[in-house]
Length: 249
Image 1: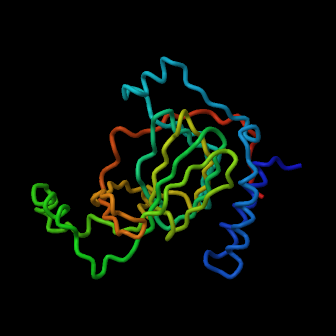
Image 2: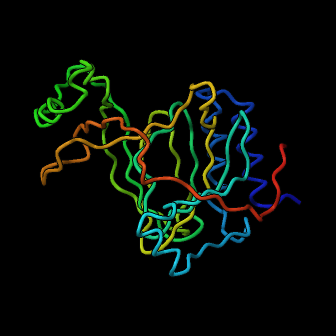
Image 3: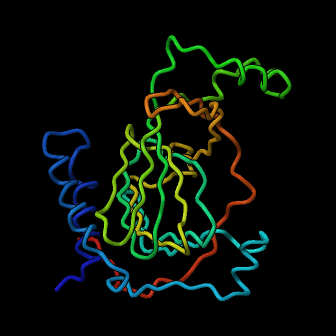
């Protein structure tokens, strides 16, 4: 009998290897993956995480990675793993270009801030951002607008082990950050197709929200997200997977 994590894996693999994204049956098949993923627990993948006081101090001082990654699977169809966001840390604002993602918290609490891109046609860059650019090297490149993505911000969501799996698509919630709340947090992460840094077709990009944070801001406000290099403060340690093995269905 297949393990719970194998059931999720084989369901996701069937969808993303055999069903055309955007076809009439795609969403129904994806819902099956979400339902199965929502049932996953840390026990199902034989997972637990705890940092001792010394390690936690190293994390706070920037001498230890703020996140840990546990590799479960990766091929051309999908990647599957467990991300741990250590206490007081975050996975910074980033995207998953042309990718779907399914995320299920299996330990702790995660706060998710997400954005969906919107068209910049007819939008004028805010004056405060233009002013900041004048003193930066970007102004010399004459490509200020192309360095930005315009996006609408969704309401922040706090996820625990009791919540169902959350989903991102190429157009909804694709740019986001994950923040641990009151201790380390871990989630199972399925991405399809996976990042492709070899051909450059799907590369993770990082962002900084340059929009003014004012008391009158709302979820409908357009945010200007500036693409930035990968933050030096973010990297991942690795941890061995000790759960049930995965096999292609």
